[in-house]
Length: 42
Image (cartoon, rainbow, N blue to C red; front, top):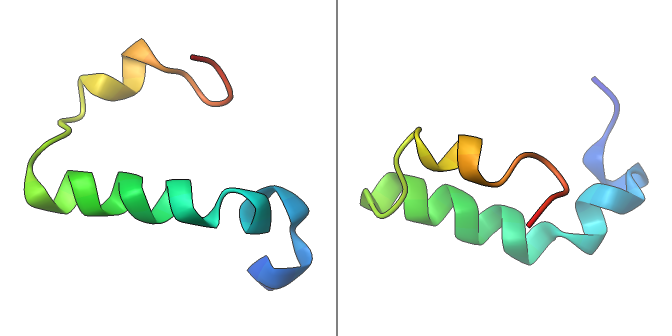
C-alpha cells in the first residue's frame, strides 16, 4: 500500500475522512448512508 501522504486526494480530504470515521464510530452514520452519497457525489 502506498503512503497516503503522497495521495493528493487523501490529503485534500483528511478532515472529511476523520469526520466520517468519527461519525461512524459514534453511531451517527450507519452503513445505509453510504448508498445516499456515493464516492465523490453529494
